[in-house]
Image (cartoon, rainbow over all chains, first blue to last red; front, side, top):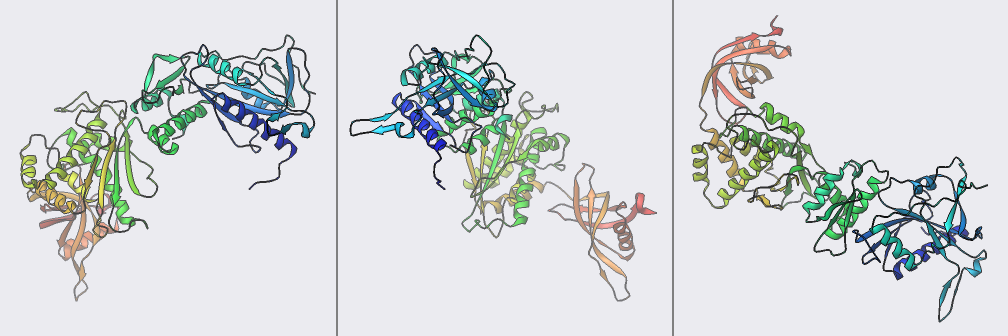
Length: 189
Length: 380
């Protein structure tokens, strides 16, 4: 039964809409799992097909996506944005190197005020700000049970071109690894 | 069987059995990658490492894609994958009458017993072809039946599936085995299929008499009375049901050319009477047998006379020299009957009976009883 959406649910739904929009525009299939009630599992599965730019032997590529949305302006160190991933279960799942299927974290950074999230007119539908993606594969373990702050490269904007490049690299079985900052992975507070 | 229990190579072989082919490179970064000419750009990817934390998840993804492409339900495809290394026989019960409300329990039990006996009879035919196997429970046949499994029935219909891993056991080293290098399970399943197929064909072509003659004359008959008896257990006179018998073959062992995948043999309701005739014909080679038998007393059906003495029919279970246990009716006088009562009261007691055992369906008849003696541990 449908229930009223909380503010967090609305952010989350917009992140799904963003993912669907980007994937559909790029010709990539997007299949989502249970929303809101499934914080432990993967949120979406993207499946793309060749041709990929400079693709490899896989002509059908799957990427599992852990999707997040945030209205908190991220810390920007110039190269990357910080995002605090609550708990360690998702972090540990995403950083595993033994997974058969590649998985990424995608974070949609929304404006702080809800009225700024989305506008539309006869000419356009505008969803403000954008999402970025990061692979946490191979990231170091953490002993902070509250969560982990991860660095998301600013150049990894979650857009159609970036998505197809990512798929091309996976089709060559070049799975991106987490580029840890020079210092140890910072913990959240 | 859960998806995580399906082996990577087993899954790969299963997908290949559906017409998919490995990439020319074979293995890509410890993944089995398969493609199909009819599905350009599509690939089915199976991880080679069963220990991967997302192995089950990745296999489910692969199978769900395959199910979409094959137009099947995922659950059905997973079930097929789970038995891809098995040879399976399916018995579908259909009837003009309603079976939606269920089958009589006694018939369901008979159905399962018949399915087991078809396996046993076919295994015995592989080991030693003859028109009647006096002992169905040969060691190798029993071992094979021990590996067989009763599968899930399909929703909305009554289907008995009996499966057995094609490599469940070594091929027995018995003399005169026709194909000593082949899988015993496969030979047994093919024998069941070929026997039923030939029997049904003879009925439909109205050549049953010559078929029975040919089986009697053959050095290696493929149909035995035991197979016929097992088949008759698949029929219920009230339901007047048909049986559609179909097969699914393990993907790991090549099929002979004349055994098409997806083949189905319909045994119509009215065929079962004819099959019972064949059973009798093939058993008719058996004669009355004068012998001494050891057995137990199973039922006391005698009657009291006016003086309170009891005599009459008793049902005994006789252990034949071939190892087969059969039931027989025997009529006893007062003295013999008293011994039968004593034997029946003591579970451990055995009786020794000298008489003539007549052929036929069980319970058979034991006549001309010249002695009926209580023996064994319970005699005291």
